[in-house]
Every structure is written in structure tokens, then in C-alpha cells.
Length: 343
Ligand SMILES: Nc1ncnc2c1ncn2[C@@H]1O[C@H](COP(=O)(O)OP(=O)(O)OP(=O)(O)O)[C@@H](O)[C@H]1O
Ligand SMILES: [Mg+2]
Image 1: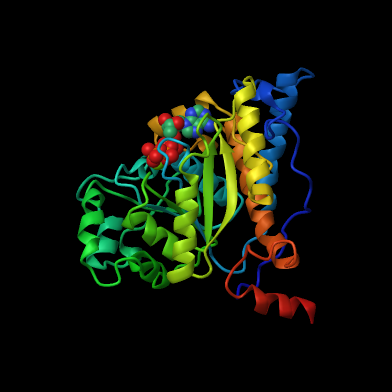
Image 2: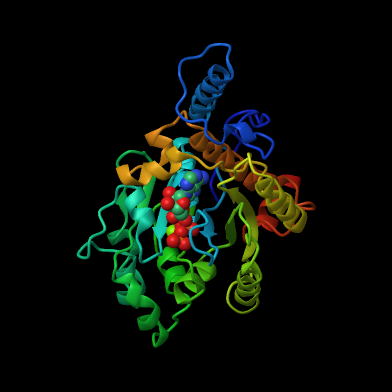
């Protein structure tokens, strides 16, 4: 068990601002000028504060938290969420590995990781049993952040895996054999529920579902939840949906707040208080091989992801101390840890 699992800074309320559905005016707020007493100036101050807190660190999980970022609907913000949360957590001192499990390789691109056809990749891990340590690359801009890239080969893996032994648990085995210490592993899934996604669900304990604040947002989610249940029932009893994140929230539209309300009613406490606004900076960052956290740390998009990462980190700790309320959320040996806490 890790000995450094404590709260590194006081647990303050998230700073107000571009974080909740009520903050609709932040939708188009981007890079912020120096501080003054205008709304933009105050937002700049919040940015500085938020980033200033980075040095304080966040609570680190006792065990590696493996989060599967999944939603079979395309373009809802899975990759954007994976890379920006990962960068935010690393910025706060965590060691984080992003596993790109999508043949599109978008997460690799966004992290500035080379992923042309000859680069050792997650395909080699899944199909040729290559050790994960041989494909993981450090992300240059962000200390503590690593990426197992995806190459175009991965497109064939869905079919190649079908006839393989232990085809659903090949990623799980690779992760178990990986010896580097990590606080988080975030797995970016493709927009489908095939064997690649099943490998992720078998390997992880937590599912993080990004939901785009659009019409039809909840359509198809039933199938994902059914798959989560199936995998929990047969292959991985620790699996549960721990986190829902509302993405591309446009506070100017009534639709966005209606969707947000519906999602909150449906899922309740799994939904993060922070939602991610629609932001040009977020969509620009990947073309520079960067996350928005490094591309424009003062933008509303960066701040929102930093705040979402804080929530996730503190929820991990809350699990530890509040077993009654959060019984479904947690790690395999939480029982053991809690028993120790109570003594
Ligand atoms: N908050 C946001 N504001 C503006 N654009 C965004 C935001 N989040 C994501 N995008 C953009 O929306 C598009 C889809 O996002 P992303 O690639 O993260 O979705 P995805 O679910 O991973 O897609 P896929 O299903 O294809 O893997 C991208 O062009 C991305 O830059
Ligand atoms: Mg994607």
C-alpha cells in the first residue's frame, strides 16, 4: 500500500467560476488578460489561483486508479477528457498513464506522442504480448505523464483478438505486469463496444462516461451500462460507473441545461459538479500536439478540466472515508484500508 496517501492541501470548495451549469457566460471566454476588477480580470485571478494550487498537490490514491473513459457515441469528448484530466492530475504531482485504445490515435496526437505505423504501440501489447513498459513514452510537456500510443494497426486488432486466448483480458494482464508506480491509468476507448472496449472494461475498476450536452445525449447509454453490468457479472466484479462528466456545455442554450438536469436526475452523485464548457481553445490544442492545460492554462476549458480533476482526486479519498455513501465506488482492498483507518 502507498504510504503517501494523504491530503496534500486543505480540501477547499472548488473555486466558483467556469465550472457549473449556471456559469453559462463562460462559454466563449478564452485567454485572459492581466487582473483587474472586471469579470475577465476576476477570471484571470481564478486561473492564477487554480494553477497556483497545482503546487499543493492533490490526494493520491492508495492504489492505482484505473479509469475507463467510454461512451460508444462518437465525438462526445472521450479523448479530450482523457488527455486533459490526465494532464491536470499530472500537473498536481500524480503519475499518470494514458492508454490510447482507439485506432484513430487521437489521444496520442493530443499528447504530442509519435504514433506512426512503426512505433511500438498498444497493438503490440494486445496482439503480440509485448510488455507495456516497451511501448510507454513520456509526454514531453508534462512531468509525470506517460502515454501508450495507438497506431493504425489497432484497427485490425478487434478482429485479430477474436481467436486469441484470454482475448478479453489481455490489457488487464499487461497492466498487472507493468511495474512502474502509477497513481492513475486513463484508458481512452474507441466509439464502439467491441473487444477493445471490453479489454478496457476488464482492466479497469472505474468507468468515466463523458456526456455531451446535446440532444440524444443519453441515447445508447443503456447499451454501455448493460455492457458494464455484463463485464461486472462475468469478468471483473470491481467494475462500476464512478464518474459522469458533462462536456461541451453551452450555457447560452436551454437545451444544455435541460440535458444537464436530466443527466443529474438520472445518475445523481456520479455526475461531477464541474462541467466542461464548449471552448475553442480546447478544440485547438490537439493540433499543436498539446492538451489545453499546457496550450492555454488560463482558458475556461483548462480551468474546468483542472477542477474536474480535483473533484475526481478528492472523490477517491472520500470513498476511503465515507464507505456508506459511496459504497459502490472504490478499490478492491478498500475494506482492508478502512478497517485499518478505524483501528
Ligand atoms: N469542450 C469542448 N469544446 C469545444 N470542442 C470540443 C470540446 N470537447 C471536445 N471538443 C472537440 O470535439 C471533437 C470531438 O471530441 P473528442 O475527439 O474528444 O471526442 P471523442 O468522444 O473522443 O470522439 P471519438 O468517438 O471519435 O473518439 C474534437 O474535435 C474536439 O476537439
Ligand atoms: Mg476519441
